[in-house]
Image (cartoon, rainbow, N blue to C red; front, side, top):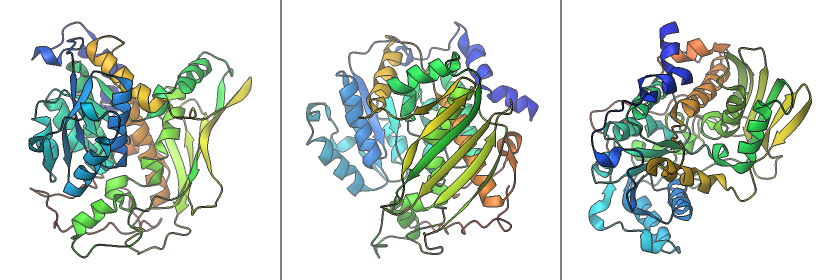
Length: 419
C-alpha cells in the first residue's frame, strides 16, 4: 500500500518523468503550444451539463468549434444540437450527420473522428472508461466531476492521469470553483496565512432533490435504458449526492488542506425518498461526515437533498487561528467559462500547463470514502479506500439498451458490506 500511495501522490504525479524536458512526442498536434488556428471539440454526453459546457467553451474562446457529438440516446443528442443551433454561437456548431454518434460505444467513435479536445459529460459511472480511451488516443480533455463512483474506477483515472502528464495532455475538470476568481484569490490567501493556522473546515451542500423521471418509466425502456434515463437515482451511475454534487465543497476543503483526509466517520439515510421506489432509486437523501486530516484538522461535511421549501445552504466555512472566512461561488458562475479559457490557453501554450486529474481524483475518492462510511457504519481510512476492490460498473462484452442490470439494493448500515 505504501508503494501505491507514493505512486499516486500529487507530488510524484507531477514530479516524475513527466516533469522533465523529455516528453514523448507522437504527433505535432499533440504537443502543448502547437497552436492550431481552431480547436475541434467533441462532446460525449449531451445532457444539460454537456450542452452548457459547449456554450461555456464558445464564450471562453472564439477559436473553438464543436464538430462531433456522442450520446447513448439519439433524442438526447438531437435535442442538445437543436438547442445549440438556436444560440448566438450557432456558426461554430459544425456537427454534420456523419459525426453524430449514438449508442454505448459512441464515445469511441467520436474519439477516432479527428477531434482535438473531448468533453466527458456523461453520468459519472462511465468516466473512467471514457477518460482512459481519451488519454490512450492522445486527446486533451475537459472532464466533468466527479471522476468516478467507486475506488476501482477512480484508481483507473489516476493511472490514466499519470499517462496524460507524460504525454503533456491538458486535463481540466468541471470542479469550477478551481477556476472562480473569488476562490482562486481567497484559497491562495488562506494558504498564505490570512486566517493563521487552519483549525477546522465546514462543507455544505444543502439543496433540493434531482428527480429526472417523476412520471415513471416509459414501457419501451428496458432496465438498462431506464437506469440511464433516471441516472441520478442509481448508485453505479451517480455515486450518491455526496459524490456527484457535494464534491464541489469537499474539493475546496481538500484544495485548502493540500490533499485528502486520512479518515472519516459518516452517517446518513433516506428521510423522505421512498425506499424501494424505482423513481427514487437506491441513494441517500442526506449524509453527514466527520473527516480528519493528517495534522488533526477536522472537516465537518453535510449534504442533503430535501423537497422544495426546505432550508438551503451551499458553501464552505474555514476557521483559522486568526479568524474565519465563508466561501461562496461568485454570482453568475464565471468559473464555468474560466475553466474553458484556461483549458485552451494550456493546450496552445499561451498559459501555464494544467492537469487537474490527480487533485480532483483525490477529492472524488474522499467523497466515496464518506459515502462508504455512511453506508457501512464503519470508520473508513484513506488506506482502506485506496485498497478497496469495489467496482460498481456492470460487466458486459457489449453494452446494449436491453442489458440486464439489476439495481443495487438500498444500503443499510450493519447489512451493507464494505469491500
